[in-house]
Length: 315
Image 1 (cartoon, rainbow, N blue to C red):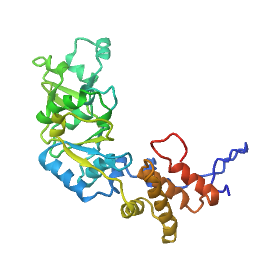
Image 2: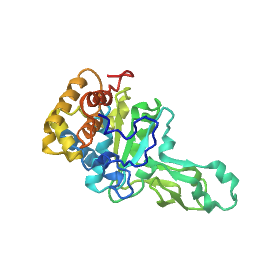
Image 3: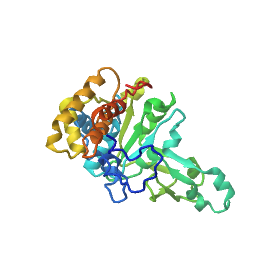
Image 4: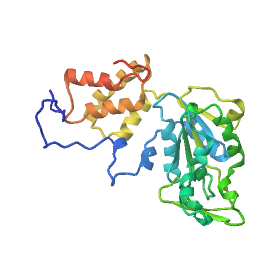
């Protein structure tokens, strides 16, 4: 029963095909909901709500841990969406990331190759990073997502301490020309948005809501942990999974049995290895469509989708 397949691998060209509507979380149409609204359907638990509010009141970063796929990243988007705080400033971390990467970048080579006499043009070569943009003065806090901080170099958590405490930083390239040029316009991390910096210094007026995510791949130094509130997001159980599926997929009541079977299968497999909630969503989307695989084809597909994250072999 191959009717659900678009690509058949039969060497016969077929141009008369059309994809159905995508899952709500994978819609890239220019007229679709903006990416920012990915947090609109996030199902927050009471502990998550309480600690987000505590972080807002205390002006402290929130360190969010949990297994992959539990919603750590989505929490930042949910807060930004509900409170109308604009686009989330996303700073993905790698082993090579340093503090300056998050604050700003300076194209020194481009500057040297261009006109050397006009200091006022230096702003064209400076781009604020996500952290630097988050610290710009504002009436309400911006939302900064520092994603996978546990992948960072050993020094980065400690390097962040001064920023978290003081809420300000300097751009040396601009400080050196104070007196000659006091105001410089630079690019922010927001698309096509610039800002004017005075005397090379940026200081926040509303400390950003900083959400740092970690998959628990390393421990953090006590001084860093002391400055953060900590939240561990547990894996969702059956009632929560049902609510997540309802929020993301508009399913017919007749499919309740099919969905329940998939949830049960997901929960059983999750006791034996790591699975992410979006894997369950993917399976539900594919097998509950009108034109979907059936029989052994469906079972094999579900097994492949619900593949353990900590295994390179088929589940």
